[in-house]
Image (cartoon, rainbow, N blue to C red):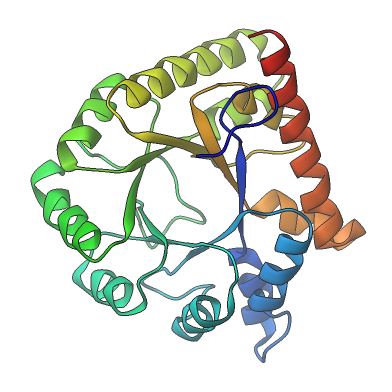
Length: 259
């Protein structure tokens, strides 16, 4: 892991391009193209690309994954459910990382983190097979200390902390709730780091909410998608990513100044 000028570990930005595919699929055809969105995101400062291949293929398709893996010059993070079908696809393409997420067909987007504690026996074989193939394995979880312990037992290389509740409270201007959630994330990140697990975070982050999460020193990657794709409508995707990248860097520099 590279270090920033402040001596802290550098903070990477992964851009999720799912909703470019959502827009394409609303009408059919090939436009807008998720691969082009990936290239524009990298141009704007993204360190990697995230894509969620859902079981119902509501946005990203199998062809998208093939093209992304073949043509990307930066790491591909494949979000997927822990199923035999998705395991086979991951083993065939061998992305840089796989993030195991909960998946329900009735949800609009991923809601909540994995039940790692209740699913530990089921998850462990998937984690082991992915790791045996040289794929880094991430678990998308709530910032919960017992879940961190279970993630370590599962053999996860990475946990991605679900920032959705924090972002909703921020939108509601609930200062007490925001402070509580930031503290939960701080404790979870420190606990994961103590277990030797790399810490990522994401879900619902915007220009206004990214700073406090970026200032958690153990967090080394943020994955942001829907907000950036929405902002791209108004000013272009590279520009939206570039601004997010700057806000992340500024928050990290502020953290370093107070270290």
